[in-house]
Length: 134
Image (cartoon, rainbow, N blue to C red; front, side, top):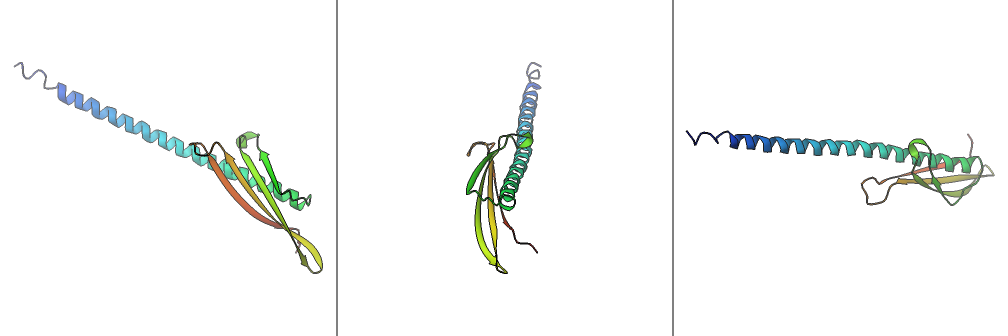
């Protein structure tokens, strides 16, 4: 009768170990999904910051006729706070119907965080604009 007493201890320990392992796996999967969602949001913000840089460069080129070679924008408002956007602009002149026109290529590099770290995001956009009309 004494050999039967400890019989339930082995399955109980096995069950505890298996449940603990399943709990650890569930926590790791949950954390991985949370990081995926966070990085997707940061990538969307980086794209929005790059678009803001393109808009800024296009405005300066088309409205102000000023194509600065390189400018850095440090965004500080709302969801884009903390993003840095490097905007470069290249102007090219051409003649159309005896009128000198300009084409501008605007490139925006947006980034946030430190390269090599888990929270780092980076996006590059390029657009071409001209002052030619219809």
